[in-house]
Length: 139
Image: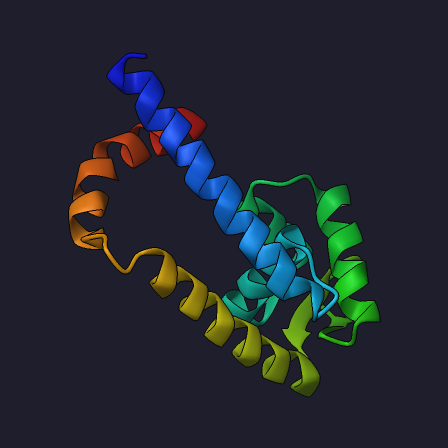
């Protein structure tokens, strides 16, 4: 196996195991990783809209709509009317804020335990050109 294949295989393995751990933890909050990523984006961008969240996460609006509807059912987020009657402003509820804080704390623990023996700054420096390449291709 050449170095390029090994590199991408390693990324996939790390990603798969990380997502598995996250899913186990998130299931206690009735969340999937996709829901968590949108939930986290709404928290970080709040107040925001479905269109903005879908664009940041690079997902289709119908997919974002389904996920947001589930977050509303869980009482993690609420919507308010926007300037345009088709637009809805998304924010976290008090329960959503509390859940976000709990989940984020656990996510950070999972991440730190996963990277105990890794110099993350070195990895980030090495990955910078790859990340830049994929951002450029996306545009």
